[in-house]
Amino acid sequence: MADLRRILYVEDEPDIRAVAELALSAVGGFEVRLCESGTEAIGAALDFRPDFILLDVMMPGMDGPETLKSLRSVPELAVIPVAFMTAKVQPSEIEGYKALGASDVIAKPFDPMTLADTVRKIWTESGAG
Image (cartoon, rainbow, N blue to C red; front, side):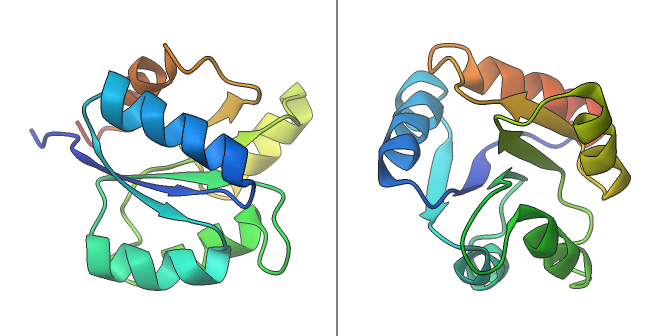
């Protein structure tokens, strides 16, 4: 069983990125690498080798679903569990994200105190942990 240690977080909003980084590193104890775009995330994922990827849905340029598709096309990245983070959490939207290959969806705004636990739960349920 692998350990969840390294998380790649992709978010275009600096304030949300900062809160999530604190929630994941200070509260959760994870090693976190931040990216502000989907394009940046592809290269960072190859370099950082994350155990888990948190991906914003709505970003300029390459959005979350496009980024996930690109990640899945790279053999070394294809098996990394990914969760989308979005305010769009209607059941039909969540099913659509899962159909794209996401392990789960985390609603925004998220609770910084429980984000790390939520990620651990998704990680375990994805079969990776």
